[in-house]
Length: 64
Image (cartoon, rainbow, N blue to C red; front, side):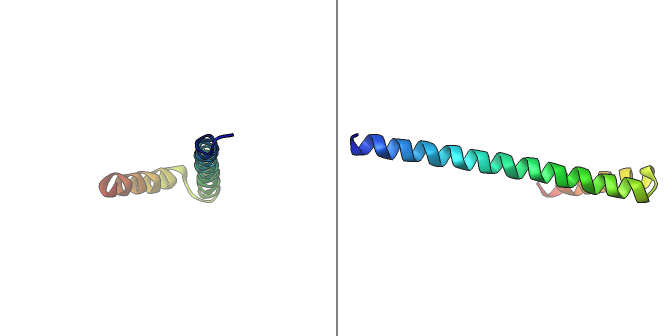
């Protein structure tokens, strides 16, 4: 196998590994967020939870 082909394979594997890691972190983050929202919703009025989420979303939009 020529050296360039090995390098290309290595780069492809690195790219796939980064992509899978990013997707895993995205899924894990979403699961954490859903659990946190559910926890809030079980101990607070839903209107309060919605207000908190709207305020957090507002901050994210401002500072993105």
